Length: 217
Image 1 (cartoon, helix red, strand yellow):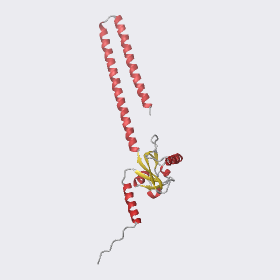
Image 2 (tube, one colour; image 1 turned 90 degrees about the vertical axis):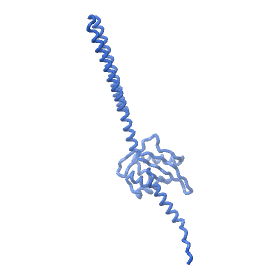
Image 3 (cartoon, one colour; image 1 turned 30 degrees about the vertical axis):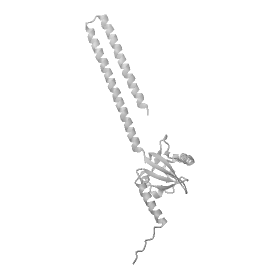
Image 4 (cartoon, helix red, strand yellow; image 1 turned 120 degrees about the vertical axis):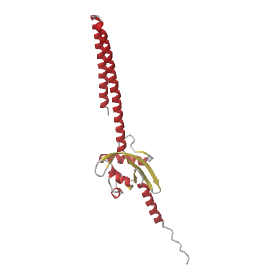
């Protein structure tokens, strides 16, 4: 009995397989991915977005993307979307701004977002890659704090050296006055007092400088 040829998969089957493959690829990416239509609604989200924002996928699809932003930013973001639609290009979103996302529980966190336009015969979409920027910012803050501490330690070591040198020099000068005449001793003491006063002024200026640096954000 001749073998019967298996029917070729329908175009719908091919589309379903393609959708499954694409969805699987999106879910293994380290960044959150959103696909947004021309009206600003999310038509696709990956699992990283669910983890990052605390929503289920079904809670986000067909919802405005502003649901993932602090409420105070909704109006401004809609205006940004309109401007981007007029001039779509691959770029970071708000590179000069501090961007924040809003989780389902209302908590906020810093995010880094990159935008890429996707144009097809059926319209234009935007792909947004979203990354939780909190770990990077915390690492940067720790680096800056460590740099400040290192600089303060360097200045403190310099102050100690200045004081020790000043006092040591003054002590030697005073010791050398023991065998001098009263007039020479008086002049030497006055010179030593001026030297100590200069050291105190130098230390005070450095300390005040440190205090001003502490006030700089």
